[in-house]
Amino acid sequence: MNQETEPSAATTAAPSSSPRSRQLRLVALTVVLTVLAVALVPVVLNLGPPTRDELMERAGMKGKRELLIGVKDDQPGIALQLPGGGWQGFDIDVAYMIASYLDFDRSKVVLLPIESEDRARRQAPYNDRFVTVDMVIASYSVTDERTREGATFSAPYLHTEQSVVTRANEPGPVSSLEDLRGRRVCTLTTSTSQARLRDVGAEAYGRNKISECVQELHDGRTDAVTTDAAILAGFVTASQDPDAFPTTLKNVKPLRHWDIGSSPQERWGVNTGPNTALRDLVDLALHASAKDDENKVWEEAYDDNLRWQQPFNRPQSVAEEQQPEPRKVEVRQWPWERFALPLPGHPGPPTPPVRSAARVGRPGRGRRSSGC
Image 1 (tube, one colour):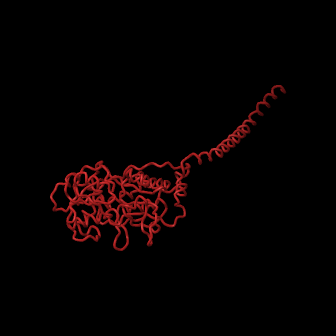
Image 2 (cartoon, helix red, strand yellow):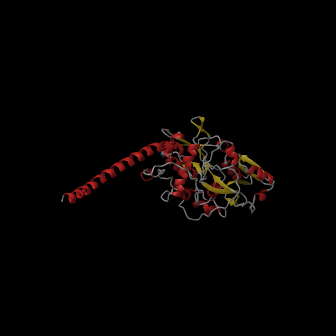
Image 3 (spheres, helix red, strand yellow):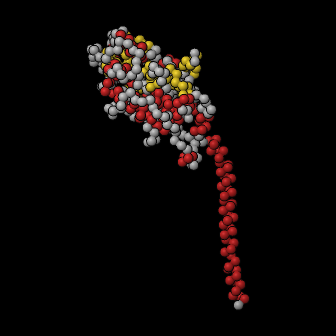
């Protein structure tokens, strides 16, 4: 009996040590993984892309009291300063959208009128002196020359094209710049289109503001105005509908918008100067706008400011009705952040549209840059 019971005792004792061994192995594995995690975190932090919070720190946005943005003030539909001091236009809505992503509400955003020649160096008047703005959102076309001058552009936020405006009673057609041979043509001083106009035999000259060119067109002191279609569209619309925009222009006469079909695509970008971290944040804001199905700020800005103008400007397309493809910026997120982080803030209610939007726009064509 003893010989039969001894193996039985040994057999029952062996399993009691198995759970303990498994527990020890599990503890050892946990310790190893913890040590590896602690060792790898600094490597990930040093070698991986920055977080959005780190970009905000690098860009100088943390604790900043106000965000200075240089904008145009004389372009109806794009950026217009209203008689009461408010602002209206597509660029204005884009500016507030980007500011919201940077955690600035509208009360902390300061919009400053900026001249075309000052956009590269980001200089604008503020409280009786010139200051360097944080960014420029001022119908600013992306060109290599401007990059060499010091501009640092975000991905494009609007695509349009160069066009020509004349008085409605002027003989036509104007289907190319060559049709302006021998005629007096006004454009922006900093526009590269002046040289091309002279090449085709036009009498080209520049003004600091496009509204000055349009006023001279109404006054009969010039035969045509050329710049980006999205800029000219508002003046054409206002010339046909006096209630479309508040204006200080005088002797307003009906204008006609011509599709010259010879310029490349105009790609408007945001200039952040040497602040590349801010450039990346702007691109993140544009990416969120383009890729988030619930973010309709860009579409609303287009509808409220540009789309409804299309009937006044046919056959010229005002601008492409799709937001350009954004640049993808790599940012570091821990797995739990992807679920916990809120979506970028909405800039709040936009300025009420001047006209109800109608789906009448059409996509633009690829053209050559006029550098406006």
